Length: 185
Image (cartoon, rainbow, N blue to C red; front, side, top):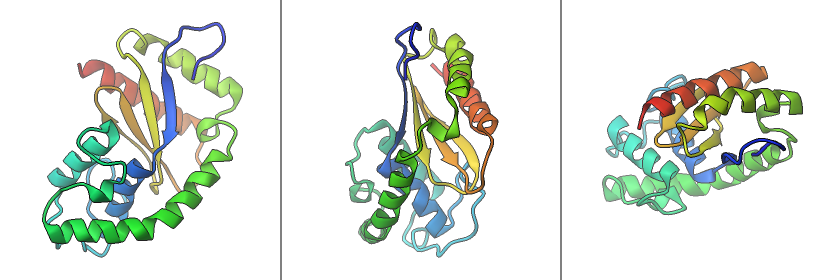
């Protein structure tokens, strides 16, 4: 995103099916990893097969950054063969719902419901970070609460929440994350 008459600082917002899958499996399984720890209990089918918070964190980070991870994160070689098989099964269950969710977000005219004026306000709020961060990438994910997780060096994963939220909730989460990323070289 660039606003006319401003610097050419890359600010990307995207709906990434792979990053969203990593969050979706937390909600199915019930594993809680901060800040994605506000969902109900799940079937524990991945924890039974060896998934733990540290393993999930490494897998999630590699998926978001795009290192050592295939485009289909269920094909990542993490954990035991039984865990890998369960991830592949979940991927096939996940795809139809994920595509529907992605398509519904794509039809929105502005990111996370921001008006043009609110987008300009967010841009102006991000100006101080443009000298500290080479860019900023926001990944939207389907999570029942508005939460943000930073993935250095320049990524933020933003849970959009189930309920109607004010644009201020999203803006505040993005600004907090940008602050945190700018302090983390």
